[in-house]
Length: 340
Image 1 (spheres, rainbow, N blue to C red):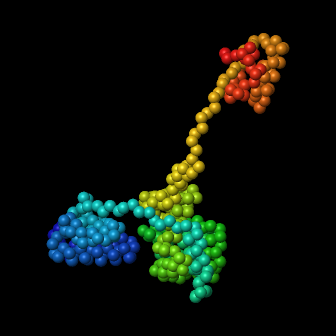
Image 2 (cartoon, rainbow, N blue to C red; image 1 turned 120 degrees about the vertical axis):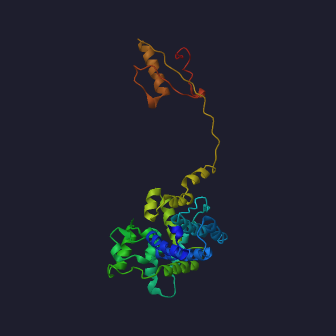
């Protein structure tokens, strides 16, 4: 049925599926724009996997993640059309997020505190940065945060990525700062009163003043995840706090917080060769059913001398000791003790 439609009707019909599937307005617009370029590329010819690959080949020099995103859009359309492209995949190389040192975070806050203009915004900017650092919220989630979503020891992220809500506990100090800052606000005000791009620009500006290269709002989210894993949080907890749909997305932080790898490398420091174990000799006191008083006294004297901390009752005569040869006193002659 779809193959009987013209390309304009075909792409118009697909808009309904696109709207139902893509919730983010920005992503929806990007996909619409790419599909319009694909329709122009077809030039009236019916869609086919071969033409779709030819269209994607135009973007072969783009970054791998960009090509993968374009590929996902076109493949979804082709699957809907009934011509799936199962043999076409864009492999995204494994890359690690940048690691941020604790000292870098300190420099960032110092840059905020020392700003020379708009000093009335210092409290807000410092709090906003602290919230990003201690909750891992995305810039859009920070922009949408309202006083009504902040509670005594947690906050609720409304309409996060994928239009999902989640709960993030707050440290006591951060909870108090948020309570004081929002005390006179209405429940539906925006806490920081900044749009997502403005938040990004501010963080980048502070980072430049602090001498930090390639630092942005998402760097604080990376730092949040890495700190949690380094302090013993499990992967599932971090996934829920970050709002990741797929735990594989969270697993990338394990390499940055590779405590077990550090422990393995630390074995190289102060490396010592294993020392040989000392020679041992095993001795037993002979079993005497009815020892004479002299024998009993002699055995007890030797027991107290050899094993004072492990002294046994006099009536138990089957004893073992591991001794260095030079520790064996002369009194232990074969006439007194012998191996059984």
